[in-house]
Length: 257
Image 1 (cartoon, rainbow, N blue to C red):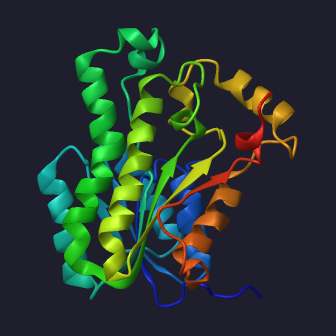
Image 2 (image 1 turned 135 degrees about the horizontal axis):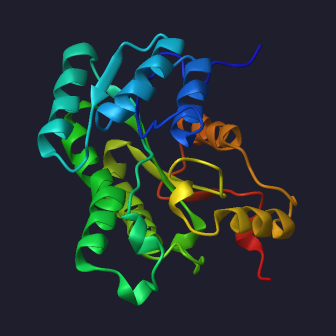
């Protein structure tokens, strides 16, 4: 029987898209470790996917949250405040760029495409943190999901690489700001995994093959492996860890060939 590392913790997980998403794997792992959950969805199409998944885990707090709509972010705070005394864990697994921005050369990124990618993928983490700040527990753990394309050039990742680089900088600045309150802020840099968002990246199958051939473990990682790392960072086992980008990518990030 595994230890319940998150027993008594209340966790908000944003970004569950379907049963293949990393956010869903994290939600299941949190549930298995004793956390009480709240999930969000962005729009009716995602609501139809998220609610049945929430029912699997007995989650009753399923809230609308389009991060581009300030009133919906505020609504999440108000709903949580009405049901929970505090929030112990926040998982931000949200990223988006218009698909056409991932097909052209990077220099052809449009002003609007750049704005949307940075707003949804990076600024939303800052906005969410600021909105939830009054409810965050003294030892709260905030997590976001990033990717190696923030550090090195990955073909066809384009403006998303810039957005993820901004997100990682946000992690460091938020960690420095919130650290005096005992709040930790970290990022998980997952290797390529077949998800809904990954489907928008041209040549993704080749990316998977390339990664598996060159990663030290000679394979790709699973969403469940990322979820296990999320449990660690959210738990007291990582009480001294903040401002970090933890790679869960079979070691690919260390390879120089």
